[in-house]
Each structure stands twice: as C-alpha cells, then as structure tokens.
Image (cartoon, rainbow, N blue to C red):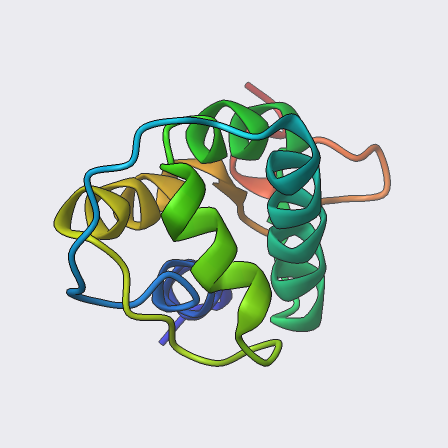
Length: 111
C-alpha cells in the first residue's frame, strides 16, 4: 500500500463512523484545534496535508463533531455523525504524495 493511501486512511479514520448529531454551529476555536490535530495526525502518518484544504473541510463539521474529535485520544477512531463521517472522507483530497527537494509533489515534477 503506498504512503498516500495509508496517510489518507489514517487521517480519514481519525474521524471514524456513526453517531448522531444535528448541531451545525461552528466554533472558530474548536475548528482551529481540530485543524491543528488533523495536521499533526497527517505528519505522524508520514504524509503532507494541505492546511488550507484541511481548514476548508473541517469548517463543514458540526460543533458537536469537533468536540468529539477534541475529546478523544490522539490517533484514535472517533464516532461522528453521518455528516461528520462524510466530511472525514473529504480529507483524503487534502493529502499530498511524497515531495521532491523543490517541495513540488513528486507526481508533478517535470510536468
């Protein structure tokens, strides 16, 4: 399994599966904390995540889902609402493949 797939799975699985929440309020402080945690999880998984992308995706989480993430141990699976699970899957689009010395993704070098 390549690094991108593993990293995507680790980051997405950080946001786990089903629980129930309809709270759509977004707390700026919680959002920043969840983004920071997600970026750390990506680094721990050995992948690069685009912080702007992660921030945009995390902004879609409900306040309740963000609280569940922050209350869980780092690297653990979190049981979120169905909407939160869908948001977690979107995080895969924020993961980059390995980079070269130029910082460009390896799959775009020479393009």
